[in-house]
Every structure is written in structure tokens, then in C-alpha cells.
Length: 172
Image (cartoon, rainbow, N blue to C red):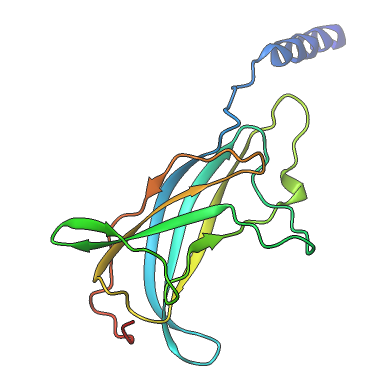
């Protein structure tokens, strides 16, 4: 009986070792999940709107996330472009002093380091966007992408329409 169990376990180990890992591109891929907008308050008790952008990612060489070094200037790895909707057409909103570029950082996490055959990482990112003022458009959307440490840019994803109708904040 022991011999049969050993043969079975040995066979399973050999079969498991023969399973191919699914090759995943070192260029990260993202997929939009959701965007939620809700009223809230900042630390000083001022009315704000909080947007929560949620998306998933997969990276075949596990190099998503920036190593934070205080001697270097701030680096970014999530980039958003804002578009306002007017008469069913979207127009790019150029960043200026009242609307700085929408760049964000996801820090590297050592727990995501991979060695061996399967270096793929998958995850979900939830990005908080704070609105102190209402935008000039009542409906906007974001196009966004990520960049890994090797400089590979992901595909570009878009949010659904984000409506500011029904919210009361100062306009800029």
C-alpha cells in the first residue's frame, strides 16, 4: 500500500513539473473596473468630492511599482488625462496652474518580488482623486495607463462617463 501511494505521489509530482507556465508579456496590461464619485469632507471639514478609480493590472516581469528614493525627484507610474464632454464630444483638458497634471505613484512592494519560472504579478489598484472644485464640464472621463520600472507603457483604458450633476461645490 505504501508503495502504491509513493508511486501515485511521484507520478503527480512529475506531471505537475511538466505543466507549462502561461507566458505573460513584460509589458503591463490594465483593465478599467469602476469609478465611483461621492460627497465627503477633507481634514478641515470642507466639502469635497472623492473619486475612486479602480483598475486591475498584470505584469509579466513583476516590475510594477516605484522604488522610493528620497534623493531622487518624485517619479510617477500612473498617468491620467482628463476629457470634458460637450455636445456628446470629448475635449482634452490641458493641465494648468488650477489643474495640475494627474500623475500618481504606486510604490514598489518587496512582497511582489518574484523569482523562478513564474514572475507574473496581478493586482487591483484603487486611486483616490479629490475634487475641491467642480470642473468646468458637468461630465468628464479619464484615459489612463501605467508604466513599469523598465519603462514599458501599458495599454490605455478609459473610465465611463463621470457626471458631476447634483453635486454642490465651488466651480473653478
